[in-house]
Length: 549
Image: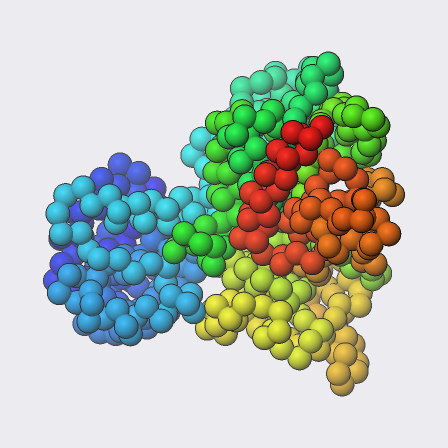
């Protein structure tokens, strides 16, 4: 049972009473000082237990609360950290302590409850515990059970997909009690990994798509005689926003996603600058809330099915979207397939993808990095968020960037949090030129692009967040793109592609009835909030097109 450590010199009994509602699921411990709380946490770790959260009053007798969090962090780096300030100190201490939020010194500054049923306070507590549970803890009940003798690339990819879809999962050895139970329901000889999803019959998937199809179906499940009003390609923030607004206004809506719902944003461990979430929200949580919202209005989702081709409609006939699992006919199409990380073209990379080398933050892989030294390549916000999350598990995290610093590519709040974290080091003017290892990643070679010279270093995890490439090879040539391959819309379209001397609408492409929103669009801001805004803004244009058609 994970522990909550409640720390206050004089009000520990009050905190214990207030947190009584958590006593069934958590081991509630109290301490009256920084040192005592550190001893409690150390004892729990030595006994093989977990600490989910430290809750401290804003004043402690033997250290400042920020110093206390720093000490506790060295013992339990994965625990969430909350200040519950007494009402007599809340306003007085706030100016000094709140600055620490921006540097990641703790997670929330709240007013200690003054009465029963302070649900605003407990909403914050539950959000932090939910974040801890989804990224650190092993799920108590697994929606999906995976049987595998080793953590191979396919097993890890399946787990990463399930984590991004918000589905609790666990891996069991074949000779375990659960492993034998799952294998008993399998027809024929097992081919690992074996997956049992939601009490269905177990199967031996050969790809992530096999798992997605088993759980969520495939586009062939759509009646081919049906023509939907709008088909949305890509379930990142732009596609999800478009789905919510389109389906809520009565349009029949289908979303096709090549990977997991959430897109690239869904891999972010914590988005702290999204409007309306003062304590931040993980990309997975944001994506799943938006997906559930769209489903409530009638949207149908198919994940794990990339669109392979778009056949434009002619003379008023619907557009045809082809996938390997079936086709979708739609009166209008919103292209929000987003971007994918650029591949690292150096010797040794490709055979080790999934075996220590990962594109994106790979949330599942982060838990496998405990006690190791890892490297993050990239200088954008996604790289910063990945490094901060990895630092909860790995002994050290090195961020490699080709530029002299992070200032021109990363948000200031992330730079401040990285500078504060003793486990994270930024290595500028550097690039990876070779990787290697026997069966999995063991070392990388780093080149100093300023002074010259190569250095080989041990490395157990290499996370590549190298910038964006558009994901739109499946579009026909009639959809104009810029020199980098991003889709052109509105007045960015060259005049020779205008119709009747007028440019397309602001989010309309050169193909009538086909629109683009989010990161795939040329000139987009490459931010979650901007993509969501474009997804909402494209729906009136779709309405106008359908009315004309």
